[in-house]
Length: 204
Image (cartoon, rainbow, N blue to C red):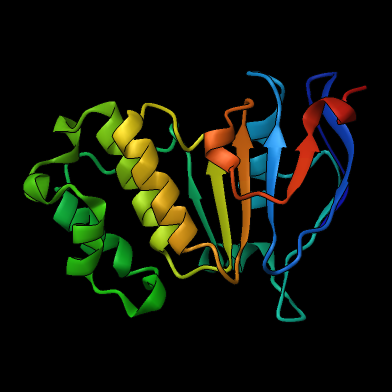
């Protein structure tokens, strides 16, 4: 739940007065142009940033979750999030699974198979293309067994085949979780969303 959220850098408000509530199985897209502040809003929801004013409240199953414990309940994929590039794909999957379980009782080998990147399982991520890295980010976030999934411009750097892969993956793993997508009007990224939040509506 977002209660009168505002974020200011120096003396300039990026947005102000954001009120929104997301049910436990709802999906919402945050729409805005590049530089509009939508990624900042998503980072606030993720708990990575502190709002200048207002409050972000996390309530799962009727219980309020403190911000320091939020990482257990939230998964995020964004093109600007760094991967551990010295790890291979297989090592990345195993390492991630130490902190978060996979949805539907999947095991690490099944997650690798779903990635569609089995031929690169032993390759270090630093040797992956930007599209392959984005695919890894989406894989880890979407398949993590968390009640909240945050996706920032999920189709960035993806070719047509990878966009289709993303759409199938999110369709198969969107049930019983809050999903919030940031997009600059690319409907292929948020085709499943039932709510819209326009950042421009909260500019001063």
